[in-house]
Length: 438
Ligand SMILES: [Cu+2]
Image 1 (cartoon, rainbow, N blue to C red):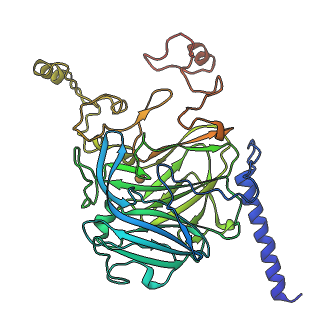
Image 2 (image 1 turned 60 degrees about the horizontal axis):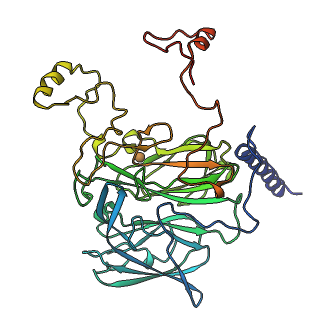
Image 3 (image 1 turned 120 degrees about the horizontal axis):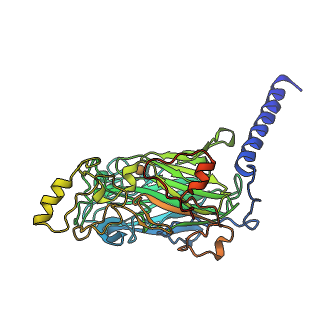
């Protein structure tokens, strides 16, 4: 064996050791349930919660699809409906799903009131198919149809979006996801495969359209176009391998997406696969504007787990922004005087703002209260870019709208005074009664 082949073999052995350690971390953590796998050969289709997949028709070996860019009525969550721009009647548009090596022919009809194009974000293709208006093609005039044709050369998680009047058309929602499966299976097989596209909107209370000129102060934050509580939960099995393909084509903000109750690896970006030896565990992944991040994990604890942007303003709704700071203010005298002219008046926010989402505050027509939705214990005071990962032992028999049933004694509750005394815990003044907790 010469020196060169010796180094080569040594490198392989070191790589194999790293890979097996990575697998041990992801799949064989102490107490982890046994791995459940999809049937051999079954490649799960990509699921777009609250969305759809673009139908493709095979014509002479070419997969043919049709995107129609246009204005549409879009409900962000019950109580807030606006005119946005998207594809085939939705924003984001339907997810395009293909297989490495496929030849695609995508017709794009423009029914917007101004020209448009479609750019295939992250794909390596002939320059004239890249969709940048002016640089690679003439813009598609309103009412006309252009055709794009290319081979999807590399598997991966990509996106598509308008590349004409980008600020306006992207802000108004002319975006979508584009998934290319590998021809031969690659990496551990997954049982569930989701896409979640983040977006941010500035919608003045009562307005009929989002404001595409906004540069900050976005007040409606969405996964696949929906704000919680309208986001469809992700229903998965304990011990299954789950992939979520996150994409961000919002106008301005990066989103640190956090998953509760598990750790994941970032396995790919829109630039390609992350080698297994370079993956590392995380619980929050930053998804920058114009990027995709693919995460994979094996949940080991059943339950209802929060999935949300960790920027606290991104789990708020329209009324949660730009409020005066009332925390700690003593407004009793003011409230007394105000109640003479406005019976029932009460200054809000003096002890913090939890609970304000739940209050039935009067809001202008076509606008939302601060945040949140109903939960199994009490009001969930996060809204916006928030959804729920529902981990179940039998996910295919579970009700996606149902809540997790906690085994007795596994939910945090009031502490009993006896127990506190026994453990040497002194309650603060006005603390727990002597009644044992539930
Ligand atoms: Cu965010």
